[in-house]
Length: 338
Image (cartoon, rainbow, N blue to C red; front, side):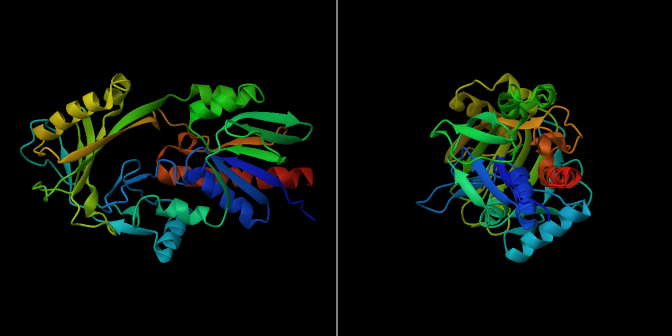
């Protein structure tokens, strides 16, 4: 009989949730840890309780090219936590914008409903989640692992395997001592930041598109967040994402200064001044050159890494990376007969 393992997954973004779900479905005991108050990672939504305002300020949409992920997205749709988004999309080539240059080719774009966090929260609902837990160190004692958190110190449970579903710099910090080979891969990944600016308006914004790719200037993506399915169209909300290199160069700016520069760029594209705005700085938004490993697994240590940075980036890459790491564990367990 195949032995059932106790497995820790650190990181409750889509990669970690995907991996944990696959392992739990196979009968293993899985506990997911994350420093945040909720699941979903960069599939994130900022919310305000008093008036229902919200804005997706991380991943803006996702596509499903791989058949396995397409089947998963169909499950999300059936559960009511995802839907297709068909915005009017423009490509803006000139920062002095006076016309849209072309429309991107046909592509099915999906979003979480009623917010981008919904698929991750739906997956997390069936898992053993330990949120608000910042894992700082991994301790190897014989064949098992213990975790040490900033909030609670050394945690009691012992795990047969530990899986890190974290951005490369955070994975590096946890693997440097116990797993130098894995740490070297994490160190090779160059992750970049991104400034996000959420805008609220009192009336509809008169622009001839719901979303646009911007090919010059500080901005790279702008979108009418309130045009997504499941949102309140009466709360006019836009999201601006800054270009990666611009974000890196301005990552340490005070939020009001970064916002001022991004609003000026939005104005050049025809955008009006908002009534209110909120800035968010993503330190690890994407990877300069995403790796294509899929995942990493050390069978001797029973320590693994997964995440979008190991699988080409994007939501789909993250979900597939988690699935591939789970498959690596199954193979490793089978090979050792345990």
